[in-house]
Every structure is written in structure tokens, then in C-alpha cells.
Image (cartoon, rainbow, N blue to C red):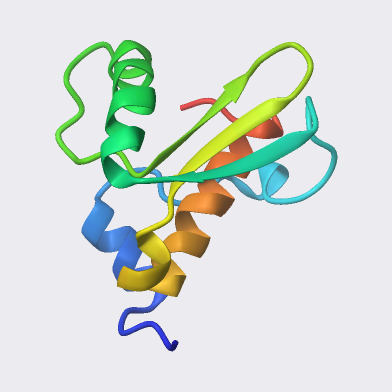
Length: 106
């Protein structure tokens, strides 16, 4: 399925750090990643508290994914419905979260 929106359009619509800086887009991970696809409702339950704690306030957007460093791995939760909505959106969110597995913080 071809995405209706480009990566640039998606990042502009999200209105925040969409892509990790170049230093975190590739290279070694701090801990081995494991990608877990869950529902959007589960994403909100799993990730929203972490995002709000990291930003210091209520995040104004629906959370679409998160990365959690556990000491033995990096668990990446991404909503499985993103692939249906837009494959490019799924790829943007996954790349963003994998950047966190490489040490990116924002």
C-alpha cells in the first residue's frame, strides 16, 4: 500500500521532533531492540505516561509509539494500525523510536 503522505508532510503535521538526528538514525543500539506491535489503545496505556514524564507536561498529540530501555533490551511499542493508516507514518514512528534505542533523547 502506497502512503498518501510523504515523510516531510507527516513530520510537518506531527509538529515535533519527527526524525532522530543523523547520529541516531543508524549505528549500534544501546540495547538490542524488540519491536512489539499493539493497538492504539494499548499504546496510550503503555506510552503516554512516559511521554508526559519526559516532556514535563501533557503531550498534546496522541502517542503513536515509545521505546523503553530495560537493562537487557530496548522494547519499542508501535501501533499496528499505523501500517493501515499510512505505511510511511509507521516507518517514521519506528525510525523515531529506534533512535531512542540508540541513545537519542529529546
